[in-house]
Length: 335
DNA sequence: ACGAAACAATATCATGTGCA
DNA sequence: TGCACATGATATTGTTTCGT
Image (tube, rainbow, N blue to C red; front, side, top):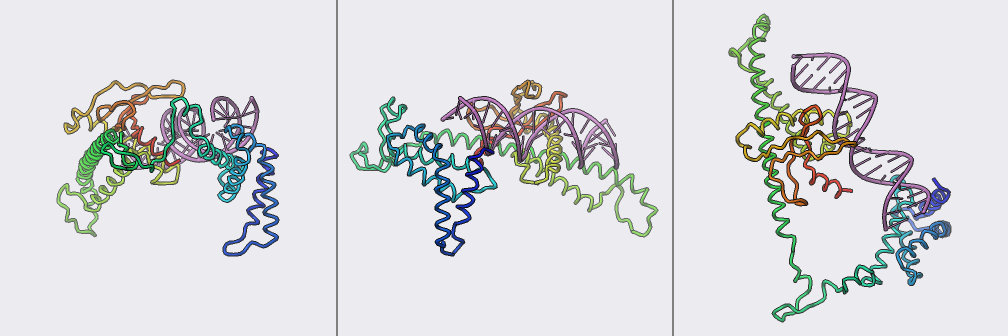
C-alpha cells in the first residue's frame, strides 16, 4: 500500500468515525473533526482530481469540475465499504463518473465523435411533428428496431428450453429403467439370503421390489435431475457453497452428460435435431479450440445461444458444456 | 484512459480409493 | 468394471493496483 493510499484510508476512516450516529445530531466536535478530515481527503486526492479534469478535457470548466469532484468524494465516503476495496480505488470511479456526467452536461455535441457525424442532442421528450401534422413526443416516434431479433431470440430460447427439458426427462426415464431393473435383480438374489430371517413376514412376491427402495430410487432420480439442470444453467453454485460438494456435483453432471449424449443420439425423438460434428480435442490454454456440437441449428453469429451438450475431452470422454452465451451474459450482468 | 502485473476466487481436471 | 467421492494440481476468470 502506498503512503497516499494509507493516508487516504486513515482520513476517510476519521470522516466516517465523525459522522453522526443514527438518529442523533452531530456534535460540534464531530463536525469540526469530520470537516478537517474531509479537507485532508480532498488534499490527498487533489492531484488525482487535477489529472482527471485535464484528462476529461474540462480545463475550461475547472471550478465546476472541482465542485463535482468534491461531491464525488463526499458520495464515495458515504458509500464506502472498507471490506470491499481500498478507498483509493473506489473514489477513482466516483470521480470519473462525476466528471463524465459533467462533461456530458456541458458539451455533449463538442466531442470529436459527435462533431464527426454533426450530431445535435435533443431531448426525447421534446415535442415534434408527426407525419400527419400532429404534435407528439420524439419518444413515441421511435420504433423498436430490435423487436424482431429479440422475439426470434426468445423463440429460440424457448425451443432450447423445451429440448433441454425433454432431454432431462429422457435421461431420468432411462435412469429409472436401469434402476428398477437393478432392484429387481437384487430382489431376486437377496430373497434367498433373507429367507432365514423369520422374524419378518415376507409378503414380497418373487422378484418384487421393496417400496422403500423404490422411493429411494425416485429420490435419487430427482436429485440427479436437479444437479444436471443446475449444471446446464451454469448455476451449480446456487446448490451449495461447499467447493468440494460443488466439485462432486460437477462430476455427477459430467457423467450424466455421457448418458444424455447417448440418449440424444439414439432416441428418435431427438433425431434430426443433431448435426454431428467431429469433436475436436478439448481446449487448453496452450491449445485453444472451439468445441461444439449443437442440439439445435446454429443461429447466426451473435444471436441467441444454443444448447451445447456434448464435447469430448482428450481421452474421448464426453464433457458437458453449459449454455455458453447465455450463461456468460447472465454472469456479466450480475457483475 | 489503458494495459500489465499481482492477487484472489473459482472451475476443471487427473488421479486415487473404496465399494458393489 | 464402473460409479461415487475426495483431493491436489492446474487453468481460467475477475479484481485491484500501479505505471505511463
